[in-house]
Image (tube, rainbow, N blue to C red; front, top):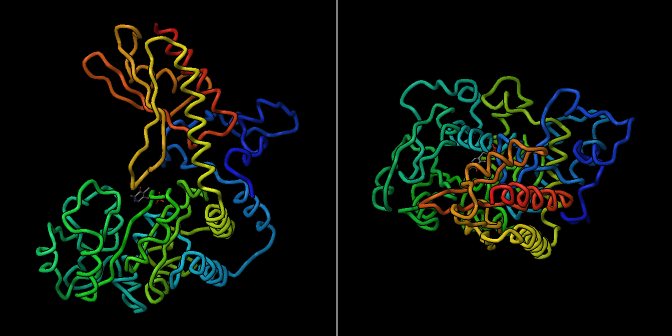
Length: 395
Ligand SMILES: *Cc1c(COP(=O)(O)O)cnc(C)c1O
């Protein structure tokens, strides 16, 4: 198995092929004038998620040459993923947002063909999904896409009273800042009212244990993004949990002709790729990967700290989302005449373009966060040197 540090073949990305020019290789970035970007931040959808693992690219390439029955593929891959994640059933979606649409749709329709045809325009009162007020977030539009409406609650008592005959699901946003109902209480109340509970943990690995935690806790449906730290295809994700709900979710998805999930198709290669990514992620030496991240931070810190007035420290985000270490740089703007935003802009506009480095500036002090987990091994020094250049020039 390839580790993250050694695993990214030099030949798979255009920027490294430019480093080792080979005239035969077609550079589509160049051909189309698209700027290759180094991501020294966290996984961001607008920055194309993460870089797929070599195992994923291999899965995509090696399965492209034959047709497959998509029902069979989804069933077989789903069964295997369910076995890997110790749950009843699983499926590959086009991402966590798709997982939310399909999960909600499944809770609304079950296997009822008429309802599958009708959503989001079911006759009668709209189905209801219960959420905590503090959990409202941009992605809950994936819930209302199905025609459901969101009922906001605060605290266990209010949640208990919010259930009625229109309630189809409850949604827990795992990375929400505050919760007035704990995960355990949330599951217990949902079970008491016999309503499926859904956990959105899209960006919540590492730690790898989170892939098992929420189904064990009793959540009926769980979703994770494929294209974040699991490093699968960006347009793939996981939805897993109760068998009857996954079956209903599949009925709301492609390759069925026109249900709500039809425009959220995942192609054959990405379904194979998602499986390969999950397998590689579960088999990885996570401790070693963490050590590797810390070493990257040390390396960049040692280069940047050569500029007097700059200090760096390792900072670990407590999560649940993006729970990994990064380098926090800080300086006095009297000594380094640039603020965090200006450095961030200079990095992004430079060549190569380095994105995802954000910070803040207050009372003449600047702080900048440099991410290391999405860097290719050869990009660690590139980022260190660019930081030294930009900050050094500002001195
Ligand atoms: C990224 C994210 C999503 C959307 O995931 P996709 O895989 O991009 O569809 C949903 N919820 C949360 C909390 C996320 O971080």
